[in-house]
Image (cartoon, rainbow, N blue to C red; front, side, top):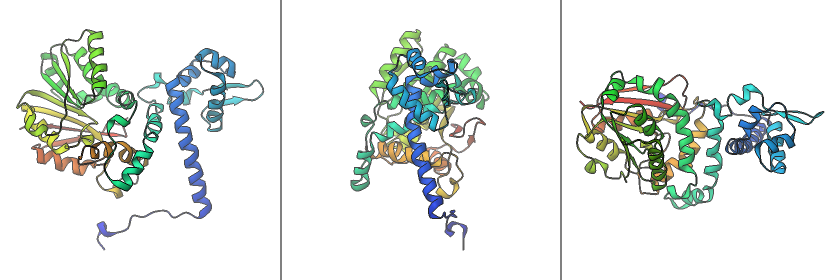
Length: 364
């Protein structure tokens, strides 16, 4: 039998083992919500600053309601995230745990990603309707989406941009220093562009984004920082293949944006069109295979397939789009890039980043 026809091996569990797995799943899912709350309220940051402290001391330090803090601490202690001494009734966040849960730990702050669980849960009813009727759930139904994505981008893109991502392209930093035109597709709140515009004042930066809410934030930040070399444009990229300005940019970037598009092939075709000859396209997207059987050992595959079902795929389908989803994978990505005109594509992973691949290519 050919390998493609072989069944995917699974480890069948007895009923007790599977019951334990399911109970663990429920506990960990519940803790994800509590970890998100700990991040958003600043409780983890506060606990990292404090010595072992009582409930009253923690509530006073944070200015939060003590009854809610008490119940949250109950989840944290029973979930083995925070320690508790019953004798003096003091709580403590171990340093090794703070190293993965606080803002000062970025880019290693896993609490940032816990926010997706609550965010996605808010559209569960609408997603169930889509299971039954088809269609999708639009961006407007995801409160805080751009805020959470900006947090995510701060971890995976912004924190690695100078030291790891830009050096992947040997000529890029000198070119940015001299002055080039740069376009960022799906720029969101513009954190990457704002950083680049501040670092490279001789270059010109343009961000395309559909969300006016995200653009308002980005423009406000540009004004606050006094950056005159960056502008943010509201743009629906459907049909970008024909609408793109020919050979207008030296560099185009797309950070975790292509697989969400309604017409991703048209967007890639437009990117090829708008690049100057010899220009570079840098695409960050999810590190995965297009084939399920190749993703079984991926450390966060269940999370990524969930995000795909409840956000990335559905927002594209809401616009009658392709619905590629988060896990469109390297094989399909390379095929679509070749269709767009990119014949020599390098794919890179960064040692610290299990989530993303970086595709680098030039227009011949």
